[in-house]
Length: 472
Image (cartoon, rainbow, N blue to C red; front, side, top):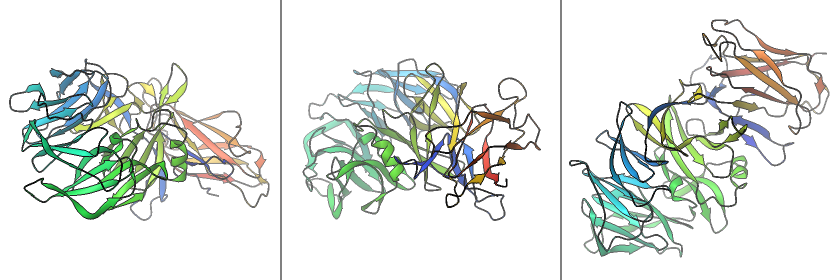
């Protein structure tokens, strides 16, 4: 009989209640009738080296509307060309820490919490903002001709001169004062200017007022704030962020009108709560083949938390460090779409990768996909397991090398996922062996069983269903 196997990450502290993990797999849902199953697990995207920025760690990436791609790598502001080469345009005074980047029709502005910088597109010139009225800012956005920053540690936000990121006036500011919290970041979306604080969000519009063009929309106050400005992202036609407020922290929110809607689950919030300080968390968003992903990096975790807007389900991603033999956060430190490709900058060095579902390794390193199933029981009756079988894509082996004889490993647990059986390996089919059956036999019996499968060969991977023969 078919058993529940495909699903999202949902593991709580009490593994006896919820034990599911979905690492480097993501659930896909059928959009048509009469497919073999309504849902399946597909392997997550891999990485292939696209370019290397020689300045240092990738601190942020940006694609201009002029179809030019830029990164801040270490202390260098660098353009990435379609042939994978780089052109360095300027130098910052800092070499570490995340940056915020935005643009107007003619300028690109970068802030790093210490200084502000402007790149003029027409002349390829790079200059520091030296106006004495420019405040210390860690985040910048752009709307209606104005560059907008919040002054770090205050309730003030400032606007530049119209279409001129180099010119600032000490009087061109107002304060978001509906709540007594400091502002974290400004964010423009759908003609609204959202001012994120550490306890609330206020929404402004450009009214054209002579005294100050942006005025708060009456009643447009969201009573939950932002834990880290670098988690604020445009996502699925709205805004998503990692929240904090007077009641606590660690919920992922999505804006719905002028309300915040929770999209994280108890299991995801349990993972976030494993880290005491989440203020250096960051996120990036990309979409591929109909799926739009919010990718949340929380320092201190060993997996990256990913929400799929097309299914409403969460999964995890990780990088397998072959030196330490441990899972780590996904390599991606930022994302930008350029040259028709989803590009991500490495969180620890200057490498820039093309990320695609057509790649089955992380730039040559193994991607280890692991699925831990829900509990399988029948009113605590003893179930004999004469076989366990996966309906999955087979015959996917490569012509030569690792992956020419691809394998999948299975273990089972009869104590809620606390301890596991020995590893049991099966073939999933050399190239063209489409009749391969992936089945394990003589697996004993249990009253409450959990299944785990794992694959690391660099091949396409998809699991459609799982079956057991429960006859003695």
